[in-house]
Image (tube, rainbow, N blue to C red):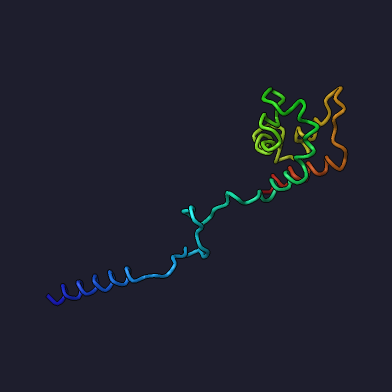
Length: 138
């Protein structure tokens, strides 16, 4: 009988303690959880980081001269058909980027199509190479 009384007292005490809590729940990792987020790591509004940020700030604008022939869904359409906002994903899904051997990437080795006059200058080539190297190091 004594054990039953102790067990009952423990259940009642714990039950009242749990319902009496009025503090804010904070995940063990620190920081609160924003409304509508169930895991505390909402990154949907975060700008791209690392190599993708480098691509957006320095490389994407260099590809506008390529888009006349390569921003479509044909065999040579490595920039895809979604406009410049889709260039990064399209390039990463294509075979024109070689992260293991960045300088051998088709994007760098085939920068001039006969008759188009489109070619990266030395500064642009260096920027593209730097971005591909950053992709390989992530």
